[in-house]
Image (cartoon, rainbow, N blue to C red; front, side, top):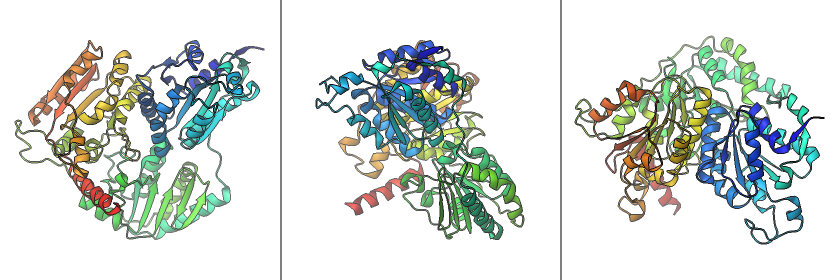
Amino acid sequence: MDTITLGQYLFERLNQVDCTSIFGLPGDFNLVLLDSIYRVAGMRWIGDSNELNAAYAASGYARVKGMACLLTTFGVGELSALNGIAGDYAEHVGVLHVVGMPSTTSQAKHLLLHHTLGNGDFDVFHRMSAEISDSTAVVSDIETACQQIDDCIRNTYIKQRPVYLGIPSNFFELNVPVERLHSPINLALVPNNAEDEEEAIENILALVKTAKNPIIISDACAVRHDCKEETKRLIDITQFPAFTTPMGKGSIDEHHPRYGGVYVGTLSEPAVKQAVESADLILSVGALLSDFNTGTFSYNYNTKNVIEFHSDYIKVKSASYPGVQMKPLLQRLLPLVGAAAANYEPRQVPTRLVLQGADATDPKTLLRQNWLWGNLGNFLQEGDIILTETGTSAFGINSTTFPNNTTGISQVLWGSIGFTGGAVLGASLAAEELDPNRRVILFIGDGSLQLTVQEISTMIKWNLHPYLFVLNNNGYTIEKLIHGENADYNQIQPWNHLSLLPTFGATDYDAVRVATIGDWNNLTQDKKFQKNSKIRLIEVMLPVMDAPDSLVKQGQLTAQINSHQG
C-alpha cells in the first residue's frame, strides 16, 4: 500500500481545495511539518514577519479565494495570531489555523517545556482558541488523523469561520494511505430540512406578492457564503431596488440599474435613507449588523415585514427557521419569485451623489476626503480588489462607485487597526493566483500603517505589485473625532513614507507624494501608473481633521454613546 506522511497529506488536501499559499512563521514545534509543504507541487510557504500579520494576511487571502491556512507554533506563535483569528470569527472568514504542538510523549510527562505556562497544561491554548473557532481538533491517533484533517478543511470552507487543528510533532512524519487523496473532500452544503424550507419559501412568496414598495439589502455574508450570484438574480428577477451595507460593498454590481447606494442608517445619503426606511418589505441577504455597519444601530425601518437570509437560518418577520441555509433556499426561491413579484411596479432608485468639495476643478486645490472618495471611481477598473482600513478609508469608500466585479475588503465589525496592512499581502497573493492582471489597492492611514508595516517586506520578497495609498493626516483622525482632538495619545511619530519601499529592499518601485487635485489627476491618469507592473506607495497628504462627512457624524454619535454609558 502506497503511503505518504501525515504532513504531506495535510498540504495535498489543501492543494486540492486551491488553498495554495500557507501563512505563518517557523517555530521549533512546526519545523518538520513545514518541510512537507515543499513536497507538494504548487504549494508555497509565504513566511510572514510576525504571527499577527500572518493572521491578517490569511484573512485577506480567504476573503478573495474562499479559505486560507495559517500555520503557527505552539503557545507563543498561536497566541500572537489570535487577534486576527477573532476578527475572522466575528466576520465569517474561513481560516484553518494549524498549530504545531509538542509531542504526545512530552505532553504525557507534563514536561515544563519552553512556550508553555510552566504548569504542565498543554491544552490551555487550545481551549482559548475554542472560544473563537467554529470547531477544533487535536490529533491523537494516526488512524483517525486523516479524517480529522478532512473534517477541519470542510468546516473551514463551509462554515466560513476559523477552525483550529493541533498536530503534535511526533505525528508529522507518520505514514498514512495515499489512496485517501483519490476521493475529494465533499464541500457541498448539507440539504435543508425540506419541510422547514418549504414553509419559509411559502411565507416569503406571500410577503413578496403583496409588497408595493420592497427593497433588497446585501451585506457581508452574501459574499462570505457565496450568494452574490443568487442576490444578483434576485434583483434581476424582481427588479426591486437594491442597496448594500458598508461591509457588503462590492456584493452588488454598482452599475446595475436597480442599485441605489450604501445604506448606513442615519449616516446614509438622504435619498438612500428615505428609500430604505419607507419600504414595506425588506429582503436582507447576509446581514452583519454592527454599529459601524449600521450608523450606530440607527436603522429605522417603517415595516416589520423583514426577511433575513443567513448562512445557517432564515427569519421571516418573527418566524425563525434554524438550520435552513440561505444559498440552497435562494436557489429554490428564484424560479418562483418572479410570479410572486409580477404585479410590482418598479420605483426609481436614488441618484448617487459625487462629493466634490470646494474648488473641485482647480488643480492647485488641496486634496480633501470628500473629493478623493467621490472621484476615486475614475481610477478603479473592473476586477480590482480594494482594501480600506478602519477609519477614514472605511467610511470614505462608501461614496466611491465601484466598477463591476470589484472586491471590497474592510474589517468594519472587528475593526482592528492595522488589519489591512497585513491583509493586502494575502489579497495580493490570491489575486496573483487567480489573475495576475487584477489590481490590489490599499488605502490605509499613517497611524494604522505603523502597526503592520513590516508586511511590506513580505510583499517585496514575493515580487507583488499592490498599490499602497497612505493617507497622511498626521495621526489617528478617527480617534480624534470621537474623543481627544488634541490629546497626546492620538498623535504619532511622523515617518518618511517615501523611504519605506527601499528600506524593505525594493529595487523596482514607485514612491510618490500627492497633495493637490492636480497631483492626483496627473498620477492616476498616467497609463503606466494604471497597470500593476510594480509595487507602488503613494503618500496622500490630507488636513489633520478632514474626514468623510459620514465619519464626522459617526464620531459624534459614538462620542455621545460613550459619554452616556460612562
